[in-house]
Image 1: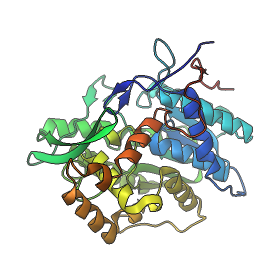
Image 2: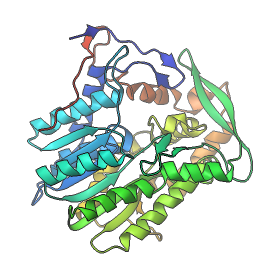
Image 3: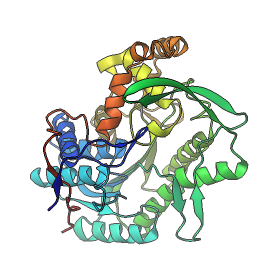
Length: 393
């Protein structure tokens, strides 16, 4: 047992330690926001990337709203010289909630790209549940090792066609700083590697593995989470190397849907503060301005995940666009909202960034990713850092 006082220490948007009590309270807060339904049966779900961002929100929303059983997969570091990662503590808290709710939901800590992980998870599915109803794919990783070739692919955050410079936000001693970030043009090889990491190949392999072992229930549905975003971030995101990967993900959904017994979608989620998005130049400033415009009308990942589950289960009619994508981002891309954000984007300067953008909110949200700035937590008290990974029955 190791208890100590944990303070936020880091650089930029990266923190060296996470706060276990803060992460636990954050999960409790998220579950409290979900209104439960009484399903005819408890669906079995497999969530790939269940420990953070939208994957965490989808796991919690599924557990709290529809009482899902199943397996969550993520890749987190346990406590050692530093604390465990925030995802480790969030997973422990989510497992505790699932147990208290009477659900059978297991968590596997392993590389989702590895075939050995697929074997381990599918063995667990076969033993505990027989088959799955839903597969939610929400993986954000900087690199991928293809287990069948041994090749390591590295994603690139670059533009396509021409270099691009954008406004961005940074913080110095907690105070917002308006900066500029420039991105180089991706080579064809870098684009191809980014597609290998963030595209649909591994998603397909998960569906293949389930199908080969006859672990798909009738009416099986799968969804991969994606993002389109604003014209303000388009040159860096949607029209950049990451966008090429997202386009591949969407094409993969169409190909999977052509199979018998598979219903596949991409879910276009709205902007949010996540560990992945905060690392992308321009996104932090954009999200800060978006929240300034929308305030409480900005839909959180848990709100969007509730809508996702309602549409997947048939509680609500799926909101599909002309390309067959589930759209959970219409609130963000409303023309009036985007016009207001662009006006603020053009107006922001170093002198007014603290008021034109919701910078304080954004900085607090980044800290909350690591378990800090969570209401109801005493950050001056010692907290236990040696939290065990949830055991699998």
